[in-house]
Image (cartoon, one colour):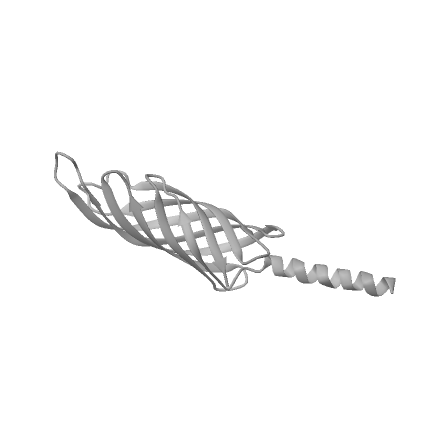
Length: 163
């Protein structure tokens, strides 16, 4: 009886350990934050393999004198730290558009493309909830008349439902 109990505990431990290292097939939610004002993005993640995934974010940016949207796509590699904790890194890019209302001057609008990197940590709860914190440096390419700050450091909190 004691051997059967120990064998059962060992098998259950193996099952839970192997499940903790898998990433969810799909996750959808919000990515909140930005370096130059509050931004919100609808975020979708799709597993492409055992330890990699694709993330697509559609966001709105809002500030005192500007409005804009941005579409980003990132390929990410995921590594397990311990239990439900993972860290990830990725590369990608996207496109966006903004309009800047310059008080006392002319209004400016631009469409741009950007390249991005991504590094972050996440916690996969036992319930279908995934919380993440990531850092995404982006370099943009757009109109030369206004694009004087090409480098952006995007930091955000992600809250996603896994299915």
